[in-house]
Length: 166
Image 1 (cartoon, rainbow, N blue to C red):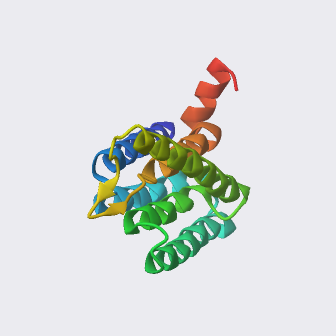
Image 2 (cartoon, rainbow, N blue to C red):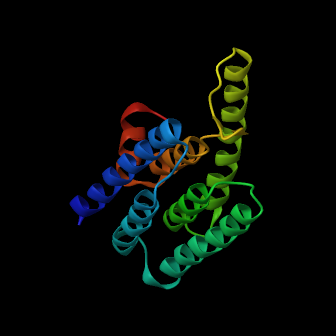
């Protein structure tokens, strides 16, 4: 059981890193990334959460975030991949304060990321300009907030924090 939990968490860490790198390089979060993140949450939840109401709250969090993400995409506030990845990662956090922290950190990291991209632009580097429109690799902010969740709530993350301090 512990090996299965650790496997899910290691794969999630890999997906967080892959999402950040892909978004920096291509300004896209592919469907396989969001689908794998969501699919990987299910065995992890079965091993770490009670079925009722725990599993239901995690599924509800994913559904709510997916709905909000669809609206944000519809009104051109965020990309489709960002919206889907937020919903996928909400499956991991559940409908609780972990989700609130995840969203707050995503927003904070997104603001910092925006400032960094703005500063890069001031240096004369045209990073993020595609088809005359400025793009922000928001997947980096999502991945950093996901890493915070991984460190605080994942069993491997908690062991690392215990070894190296908080």
